[in-house]
Image 1 (cartoon, each protein chain N blue to C red):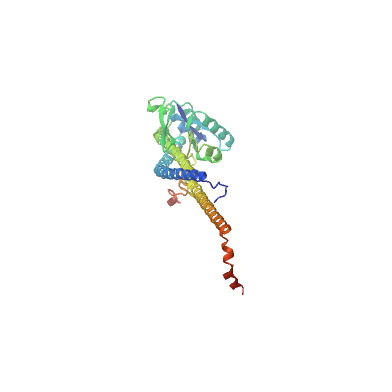
Image 2: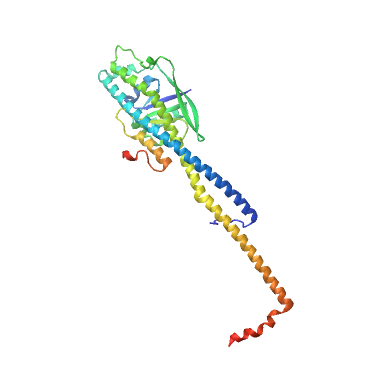
Length: 109
Length: 228
C-alpha cells in the first residue's frame, strides 16, 4: 500500500491533512530541508507527492530528477498565494518534449 | 560515406544486405510505434490539461473557503482543529501498459468508510465555513489522483516518444543511408576488380599472341607516314 504526501507551507496544505494525506510543512526560505524530505519520501512508499508551486520553484532540480521515474508522481498544486502557472507549464513541457513544439497551449499565449 | 574502413568482399556485402533488411524493418516498426504513441499522448495530454484546470480552480475555491473560515476563527483554533486527522488515505498502485510503457494507475482507499471522518474536529468551536472548505477539498481528491495519474503518464509517454523519435531519426538519416552507401561502395569495388582482372586477362592474351605471331613488326610500315 502506497501513500500520498502533500508538501508546502502550512497555510496551503493543512486542509489536505484532514482528508488523510500526509502533510509536510516547509518554509520557502529553507529549500535544502524540502529537498531532503522530497528525496526521503521518494525512497519511501509515497506514490504521489503533491507540492505547492511556491515550494517547487525553490527546488526545481529535485523535482526534475523524478520526472521520468515511474514513482513517485510529483504534482504541482497552487498554494494559498494563488496560481503561478507552474503546474500548467509542466504539462506544456511534456507536450514540447513529445511533439517538438507547443501545439496545445499555443492559442492561449 | 565510407568513413570507417570496410572490406570490399562478398561476405561483407551479404552481411550488410542482411543488416539493411533488418534496419528497414526496425525503422518501419519504430515509426509505427512513434505514431501510435503520439496519438495516445495527444489524447492523454488533453485530458491532463482539462483535469489540471479543474483541480487548480477547485483548489483555489477551497482556499477561498479556508480563508473565509479562518477569518472567523483564531489561528490557534484552526491549528487545534487540524492537529490529529481521523482519516487516512492509502493508494493502490497498478500499472497499465501503453505501447510497452508501464504507466501507473492509482486506486485510493480510505482507512474508514465513513465519509464524515474527514472532519477531524468538534463542531462546537469551529466555524461552518471550515466544514464547507474541507468538504470541497475532499470532493476534489479523486480528481487530484486522476490528475497525478494522467500527468505522470504524460511525462513518461513524452520521454518514450522522444526516445523513439531519436531512434527513428537515427535509422532514417544515419544508419540506413550509411549502409546503402557502403553496399554501393562494395558492389562498385567488386565490379571494378572484376573489370580489372578481365582487362588484365585480355592484355595477357594479347601479349601471348604477340609473342607467338609478331603482329607489331608486320604493321610498322603504315605508321611512319604520320611522322612527316
